[in-house]
Length: 342
Ligand code: ISE
Image (cartoon, rainbow, N blue to C red; front, top):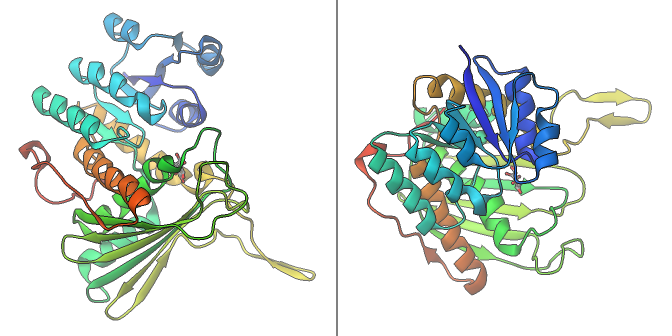
């Protein structure tokens, strides 16, 4: 019997995952969609036989109507969904960020430690991207010697209404915090943010672009240009400098076309398209693991460690200083190092 999934939050990401679960993922069905906006929940289930719309997650949990929960509400609402789901012992895929600050993410980690097993997978889908996986392998195998530095570009066309300066760190750069941990297998020890000339296309209160510089435990430096009102489209790319080579991933997508007077390809519009295969693999890995009661990707510890980086990043935005990242001791439940996840 298929894994009965409740999707909580039927916004941009929730709707994308509902379609994915319904049409492309094996071994799962959308059994419930929960959204405080009733018409939105109803619209999301209208074409899915057997799926029921709810406005209250507690009702779904009390009825025992699902086996697993996919959380796609905005980040500041994650904790209040995660805690009861963990209490019910249900495996969950929580979209990033786990929560917006280290203290609340640590509460989630502690709830999971109290439950005695890993139930929470965090939606760092880039770990399932083919380019990310091949770069991680080159770093592990030292194909070009030791990794020295990482250079990330993270560009979005525009930001949704209400996207604050802090969210540039918490919602966007959080991906690079996890990416650097994933690539290097190390925790991040400090974060610095420099802000220079800003685009006129940034909404009031936002400074864009920003340059973020991180250091890992062994002294690898990684820099990120985050530029979220870049207008032209979506781009997430990395260049890695090794002792004997330079490796790039996330270049432009094929096909390239040459026709009269022009050559080139098309610009990726958004993250749904850029990472469609990564999302499909991520959700399939989660469903397969959830069917056995566990997780198949980045953990609540990864969510917590990146939340601590975000907290340092937001402080660094304000002060311009190099801000150390403070982590609680890692509970045994999560093992040593930063595991591959995918
Ligand atoms: C968004 O929430 C995402 O997760 C995207 O991957 C990222 O590129 C974007 O900056 C975020 O706002």
